[in-house]
Length: 152
Image 1 (cartoon, rainbow, N blue to C red):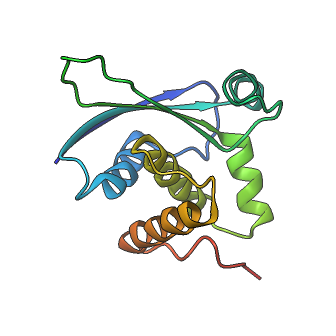
Image 2 (cartoon, helix red, strand yellow):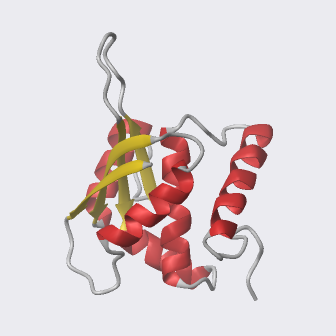
């Protein structure tokens, strides 16, 4: 398996995952699904997340992860999967609110975003159940507990 992750950091923070961690999480999500893939993970501040969320989804707020699948032109073969944009502040706040270890939540957001790049979605209940189950299975391979169980 040949996976390449381009980590782009637009903020400075000591609690950000390394390129190696991001690559490990992306690899776990893609294992058995794709043999090779390239993607960018851009770590941003709330303002950039909000601008992109508003521009592409019509939602005027920052969000944890946005996924931008690469649309392959016909006749071109590349391993380019797409881009993820992750708002570090939102991920950090969610981890605190949900009483989850920060890097477990980061891992979940990366896997969630990668599954979106692969075409999975959660628009209806059936799709949501399928996607959440895949997330649980992938996270289990990384020894991360079910993110959908409420923490006390």
